[in-house]
Amino acid sequence: MVKSILEGKTVVLGVSGGIASYKAVDLASKLTQEGATVKVVMTANATKFVGSITFQAVTHQPVLTNLFEDSSQSAISHVSICKDADIFIVAPATANIIAKAAHGLADDALSTALLTASCTIVMVPAMNSQMWLNKATQHNLNVLKNRGIQIIEPEVGRLACGDEQAKGRFPETEFILNYMKDFLGKVQSLRGKTILITAGGTREPIDSVRFIGNRSSGKMGYAIAKAAKTKGANVILISGPTNLQPPFGVSMVYVETAQQMLQAVINNLSQADAVVMTAAVSDFRPAMKSNKKIKKESMPSSIELELNPDILEAISNKKDKQLVIGFAAETDNVLENATKKLKKKKLDLMVANDVSHPDFGFDSDFILAAFISDYGQQGSLEKYRKTELAEKVVEWIASKLA
View 1 (tube, one colour):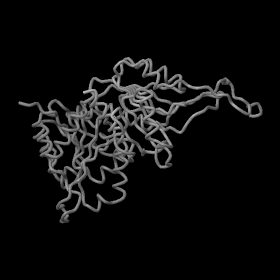
View 2 (cartoon, one colour; view 1 turned 30 degrees about the vertical axis):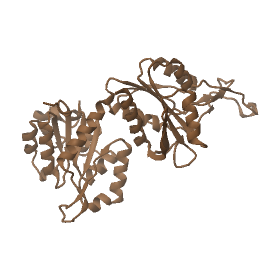
View 3 (cartoon, one colour; view 1 turned 180 degrees about the vertical axis):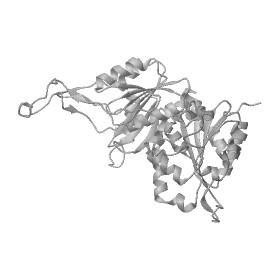
View 4 (tube, one colour; view 1 turned 45 degrees about the horizontal axis):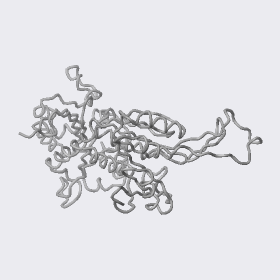
């Protein structure tokens, strides 16, 4: 008998108060039949549609319904319920729980449990079509997507309100199961592999308060680190200064200058299966720097610069069998210049990145990018969310390391 990808997995099933709540019973039952341990957490409104004892009967697990469960259920509290979870799926996800999750509200067992989750979160919205189309709901969904939360969109069909062929219907249980199997299968694709990533910009000091830097936000590298960690990789993230929170479970190495970043990469290179260089490393540094602030009247009219080391070239000379992926931020002849860099630096993949448009690239959540490998250009420049491009980069790595 073929083993299910769900066997041995721990699934937290969040059930919020919509008419589709009764369908979550079938989902909980099928997950349990596939060999998963299913821990259910319900909102108070969900219990008005289906009783907690029904979920307990099909999962053989206690069910969390409020923040103040009695001592007999203390082991499955809103804090511990997500411990060791492989995936947290909210099905159905009402407009209300989506709004709470988007804004970090925690006033019941389900919304509080969501804030404690470090595993992958999947939302399965089901609601009236007008609620689904409302700008507030769509905004909240985009907030969640930008955080890496997976959304299984509702289907078009007959809704409880009587609307025909309207979007908002809870998907079929088999579809959700297959989605989870596919997703968890991909999650395992980098287990046991180590991915080394650089992110952010570097700062090259002029004196104790001034530096030469750039506008890199680090969003691309941090998104790749999160995507790789989600797929089971050991992730080492070497980061220049950013305002970003480190992804959960990632080993952080903080640096400031290009020389520090080079040394950090070399120190960690031998254990890496793949290296992803998204950092915007300064090409130049001041030839001389002061340990004190230079007074304005003493500042020279020109500052002599010297070249920083080329980290990508250094890697190509020191790597063993690691995959090396680079990012080329260009404003002119983007694909041509990126292809030249790919060949010169002996990379396995170059992501060409057009930063000439103010709405893409630095500081933005979006990027204009194309893949270039030894086989040539893989499509034209396309608009991506950085989180979407991160998934594609990580999937490419997983396919090569399989």
